[in-house]
Each structure stands twice: as structure tokens, then as C-alpha cells.
Length: 103
Image 1 (cartoon, rainbow, N blue to C red):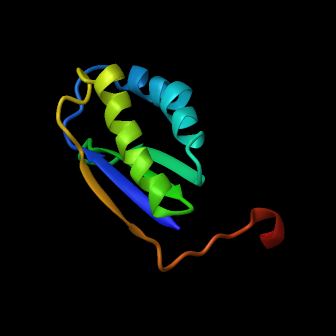
Image 2: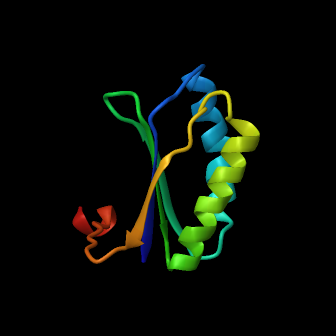
Image 3: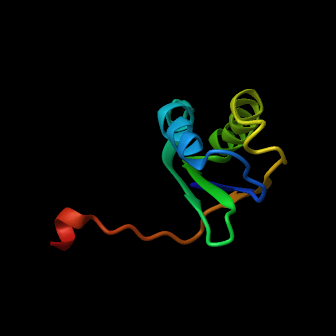
């Protein structure tokens, strides 16, 4: 399993519109990449937009980095004017709690 983190430190403009676009267009785009497992996005306390993508293997994770760069350039260049810090790697620790089993 491979995980990719993208940190966009400079966010300009309407955050509500950005959230809508990410949920309506970007998340579905990533989910079509072979090996897709999960996607999360959030704003940290300092305003940084951070996204986390989880894929079965490095190939999917690498494709997600390319897809994200293209999509942001085409759709959010004004809102996210700077390239993100990208961190990727193989996951070596993982735990998931199935809420149905935990109840």
C-alpha cells in the first residue's frame, strides 16, 4: 500500500467553492485510478490544504500525483497558485477499525 500527501500552503479565494470542486470532481477522478483505496482532504489550523491519497501500489500513487498536478493546473490555479509539497511512500503500519465489528 502506498500513501501520498500533498500540502498546498498558499490557498487563495473561496474555500467553499474549492471544497465543492474537490468533492464533485477531484475525488471521483482519483477514485478511477487503478489501485485506489482512499482519499482525504482537510484544512489544517494554519490554513494549509492537505490531501492524503492511498493506493494499492506505487504505480497508482505516482499516477495520482500526475493527475492531481494536471487537475489543479486546469481547475484551481488561481486558488492554489503554488506547487504543493508532495510526500509519498510505502505504508508499513496500518490499522483500521470496522465500526460494525467494533459495535
